[in-house]
Image 1 (cartoon, helix red, strand yellow):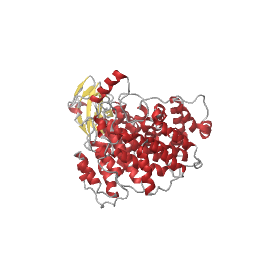
Image 2 (image 1 turned 90 degrees about the vertical axis):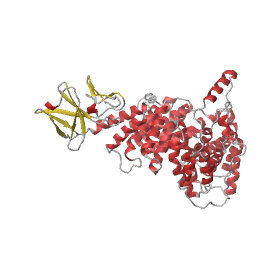
Image 3 (image 1 turned 90 degrees about the horizontal axis):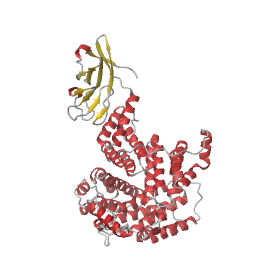
Image 4 (image 1 turned 180 degrees about the vertical axis):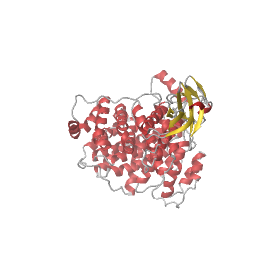
Length: 595
């Protein structure tokens, strides 16, 4: 570090035990205190809101900001009450004059700011986290070309911190972070707002928690070369074996070592076979793996923590399709296991889409119920239909199902059912399609069966008479137009009918713009609790991706989003919580559900 000493004046002008202000030629301000024969110098601007520390009070080596009572140790800059520490500068006395070194030790400053950012997230203080993130960005260490701008490093710290401290592995806050980073890169939401939303979502879920731990490593020791040879032979399979046996620490440790050797591609290959076996945790197994892979590829230095967290989540997950209600799905998976699918040397190849009549008939079966959905999927796979083509149709059916949700479910006191349950069918279908593109043919086929069964299983969530007919693929194309802000205004006013009327006038380009127009509403305004914000963001992103990859897109995706996003949703149903608890203590039976 190159020194940059400046003269602050004669020592005789620094009164003992009293803060004084000194400035350099550029107007930078320093709060200086002579104590014990040494001059201590701090940034004059309080790191909280910028009020002058030189107007504060000194007691026992602690300088207190007069505005909000934040307290700083003048010997270290540490904050003992308030929030982040203040920057401290080296000084010396030479010839009776006080000299100050303005040079910043960049490595030490990065460590200080990262520690402060992580502490802010641990305490769920998003405003403080953003300030530290902006200070980190001001060091200009990020690549100029990154789409996340000066907050790139701060977002990366969020990813690593959230993954390290997620108690039971990858969670909604990290999934939200993945989508918000994408939205910042597209220009859909400002980076600062996105950072605050993500920091609060991660901070709330893991407030005050320390690092989860690294898992127990493999027994025995070996050289790096021998370890690489082991990985090439059998390590990916051993991750799935450890997960299946619920050897969580082993699975996590193996995943960390696998990433060290093979990166995110190795993690994908190791976890796909396990994820394709069952619907895990209401779809979150595949959804979170897809988002973890996105984060790992975006922030390579955090990939080990992010994908280790995904592995931990899978290790704790419930295999929903192993439960009695999913007998039809298990039977279809058994049939698919016997099909002569293409050889497993490469990923599932893209397949030609179903023709309009075939697709409409298939989607009708998917929407009819679990048994019809999985039997139709197995039948089409047996005929040679590509899993990715089927997943595209299933994604469209999931959007239709979401648009049909009966809000009466959310008013009932005897059932723990809400619209978020149905959004999972959409996000799982999109995640299955994303994972399926890099999956082996049989894995992609299994994912198609799971997605179809999930959409079909949620049939009882439908309203008895949907408010609007399912969009027709034979309908004439709407007149091209943009909403001109009217759609966002209708959403902000919570006018579902008005929003749907505007959406039905949009062509494909208008719908594409509508997703971008609604993104800030989903991320910043639609909900209060982070769990609801996370679902709003990931559902919008999933529906937008499904439409963008649909060879014959229609209005179903945008209409599903509006039917879900625009109504005011109860985020804490106290009466329901109490009623379900009372009923359970009375009869010992589970509440009403969708299956």
